[in-house]
Amino acid sequence: MKIARFSRFPTLLIAVLVATGTGMAQSAGEANAAFERGDFLSAIEQYKALVAEFPDDEVFNRRLGMSYLRTNVNPKQALPYLLRAEELTKKPRELYLDIARALSFHLEYDRALSYLDEYERTGKVKKREASQLEMMRLDYLAAGDLLKYPIDLTFRNLGDAVNSAFPDYNPFVTRDGKTLFFTSRRQMRPGDRPEFDGYYPSDIYVYDLQNPDLKARRLNEPVNTPYDEQIVGLTDTGDSLFVYIDHVSNFGDVHVSVKSGTMYRRPRPLEDGVNSPGIESACTISADGNTIIFSSNRQGGSGGMDLWKITKDANGKWSLPENLGPQINTPFDEDYPNLSADGRTLFFTSNGHPGMGGFDLYFSSKDAETRQWTVPQNLGYPLNTPLDDKTISFARKSDVAFITAVRPEGLGDMDVYEVTFNEAITASDPAIFLLNIPAITDPSEAPEITVSDDTDNLVGRYFPHRFTNRYVFALYPGKYILRVNAPGFDPYEEVLVVNHTHLRLDQNVRIINLKSK
Image (cartoon, rainbow, N blue to C red; front, side, top):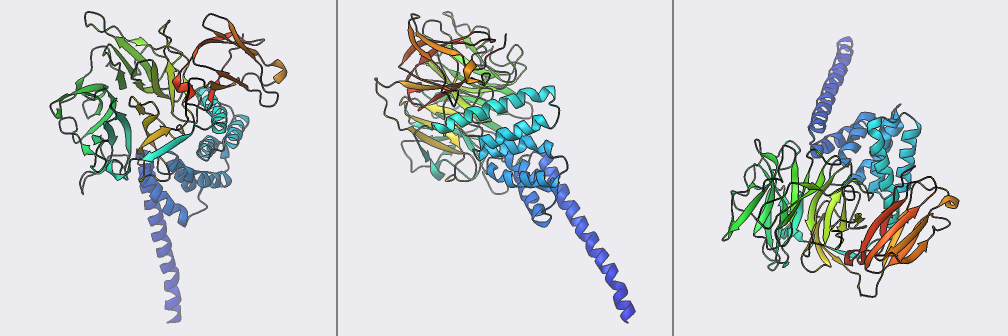
């Protein structure tokens, strides 16, 4: 009996171990499948369970961290898992870029820069990685400065009348400030099935800002369908919506839906010249209806998504598309253009101009004489964050705007917020500029910076701070010429139009990239 009893124990143990191993393999397979198809919400839950059971598994820790980085829920959570994976692996270098990104969400930009340095020091940088690394480095340098001079803002979550536990984003407000349109990927009915990424199809909603007790309502069909529709622009009065459609057989173009009575008609493709065989993702139209600025990755651009424009002549004919040029566009992505009411300020998002990391919001001013757009300025922290900040919409009152944000008081994912710029601006206030020139590391070799007015009279001559190597100066509203001359580098010159938007920022942080001769 004893022999029989003991002989069964190894068999039982083996069976338990096999069952455990089978269960782990199945759980890991499900987690990996969710990760590979881009359903990072599901991947997080499954990898969390795996890490709880196997805390010393490098792959589970790393993929859990990577999944957090790829959602809006709480990317800060990525850092401890990525650092643990770094301890467990024999090849930590492959983690360094993810750790740098995770550190940026904790606003630890100096540590993030050290990980970029370690990545470059411990292996060969591939050609396709070089531009990404340089962009990350410029972001982290700019972010360090932006953090020192935060904008005085008040954030107001619009609450459950607008927001949900799901992503709510792309807010656009009519100029009279009465009506707000936005996109949501919320669940409409019990039993609805999510898409491959774990979210539900996107639809367009409208909210009456004058009746805050009413909830936002989903727009009528045929604007919304069982597939994906997103609002990507709006006319001043809200009589026409610009819509991006992502259907099985119809995607990659901007459409327009025109209001008829109280309903919006079926979206139709926008004017010839906007849509192309490439992808067009958003657009804005001037108040007079004669200029459309849109984003496109069509051939002939700077790379990625660029901003383009078409204009209407006296006969009502639209021009051929014109790229807004290297002042605005970069080899990376520029998207979601939105013109101010007077058409003199262009707001947009970019991951190719230095900022907080990812996509940041920028503005550019139109020179009244040359009709050219000036070098973009970052809208500042905490309006911009390490997350992707993509849209901003103003009514006529320029100190209130609507944005998308992920904040602690939010309802679960991206929410729509009203932001108020609190600084009191008077006509006698100057705009403060902070310039950083990364190419110059030795203060003794720092270039001289001069600023002249629009008649080329010298306004000021500036030299760097002896410790920070940065330049600080104040300019009143107006048009200026900024010049930088440094030995061994090509001369740098730009037209700087200082306007009301500059005055709203506590510090206009700029990074100037000089080119070697």
